[in-house]
Every structure is written in structure tokens, then in C-alpha cells.
Amino acid sequence: DYRNLALIGLANQSLVLFSAERLKPLWSFLGENSVLIRPSISGSTALIDQGNRVIQISLQDGHVLQQWNFPEGSGPVWSNSSSLLVSTRQGFLFHFSLE
Image (cartoon, helix red, strand yellow):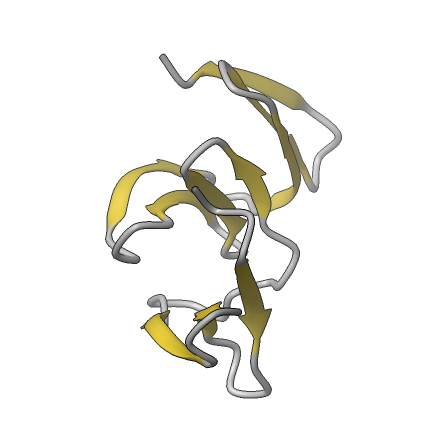
């Protein structure tokens, strides 16, 4: 259950998942590029725009589950339980299945 957790973006561009019950970090994530802090939460994962790629990380342990590369640059991401939508800087919209 992920309702008592907080995914926080820090000044160093990392993400930290905190437990509201224990008030301590469960894990932290610092990607290869700056993490643009506006993750889209989908089930037990977070989808994060990293400038030239979008990654899906596990909320359980912070490990990367999969990634989609956009050499021309990615933009905002939207998701639900089965789909990922990614806009690019050139104005294209891509759809990926998360199943």
C-alpha cells in the first residue's frame, strides 16, 4: 500500500521516497541526467522525465524497471495503469503500453 508514502524531489534533482509512518527515507534515486521533478505515479511505479528519456522506477525499491529514449528531448509524461503518454519538444505525442 503506497498511500502513506511521500515522493519528494530534492534540490540536487534526486527523488526520495519517505514513509509517513516511520518519518525516514525508504530509498533515494539520482538518475544519469537531471530528474525533472514531476513524476507520474502509476500503480506501484513512478514515471519520470529525465530530459532525453523517460524512466519507470519501482516505488518499492527505487530501481529502474524500464526506459524510453528520446534523443531529441522528452516533455511531460502522463500515465494510467496501462498506458504512458509522452510529448516531445518537437510536438509529437507517443503512446506506450505499460502492460
